[in-house]
Image (cartoon, rainbow, N blue to C red; front, top):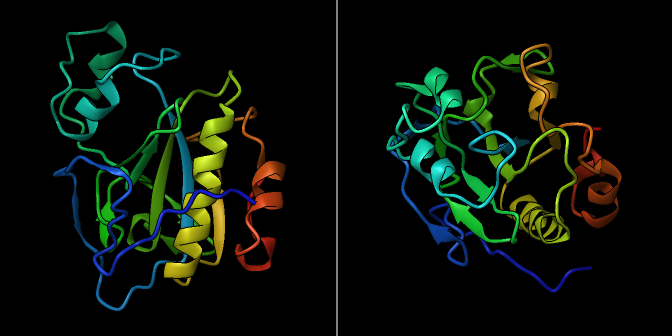
Length: 192
């Protein structure tokens, strides 16, 4: 098991993560427990890693003219609770107790609007390239901390809650690796 740990405080903040505030969040519905982790992938520009454009997107500072692929992102207001860079750096944009805007139109086990009851974790990556060992290590440690802090029942991919609309985290994501290293995952309930 990894020696990494990412304790979550009473405000839903992981102090060991780099904190960058996203305005793209709001309050969760009253008395709505956090029961789902949603894993995504993101790269801006598509298939390129290491720049600051993901941060710019989540903080409403992305220039839609900076790359041809960004035209569809104009005026888009999205966020995620966490981003795990290729290097393993963990960034938190939204406290866990707030609702990040990561899932969009979504449904899981008969429940609509997954943002209301989930935590979104973005991995810097794409559907066609393997993720880095450092990313898995941080994701596993973060997930185990979140399982301790909240009544999370499952970890799924964005494709699971928005089938036909989304494909991430994609076929290169190793769900078996996650299942093997998240002993706190309730009933081993990780998608894949």
